[in-house]
Length: 152
Image (tube, rainbow, N blue to C red; front, side, top):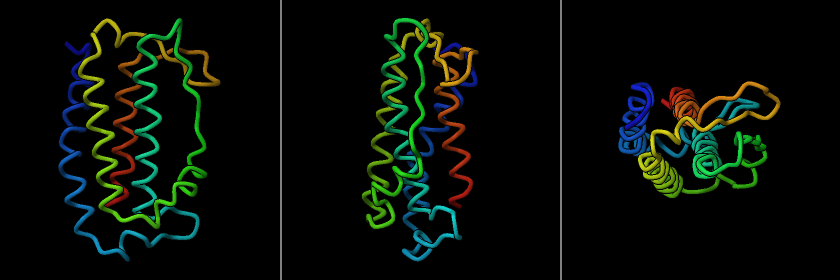
């Protein structure tokens, strides 16, 4: 059982996005997927950023379950990852499959976390106030939603 209704609601939204987002992005042309304003990411690059976020957070959600003390969340270089992974050049079908698979795994891992483990403390690098693993999961989905608003 999840400790909060908000986490349960966030996970339900993530389940829906796994089915909705591929259909919506697949309907866009290659030009719509790759165009971007100066200094901004394209839709493909935003999707790539969400892939990087899923990779990093999947590891966090796993490791925070057995950390000895507060799990320290290390930042990652978002801009460099988008460039190094060359998301702009990859087929959108590949990106969508990877994104959906990673988030399906996130759901699989999170659904198996015991409710008492969801209260495990996590600490954001540079912050002295601890949050909970449940908060981190909810924050991941809120971050995803923030970027999804820019895609459509």
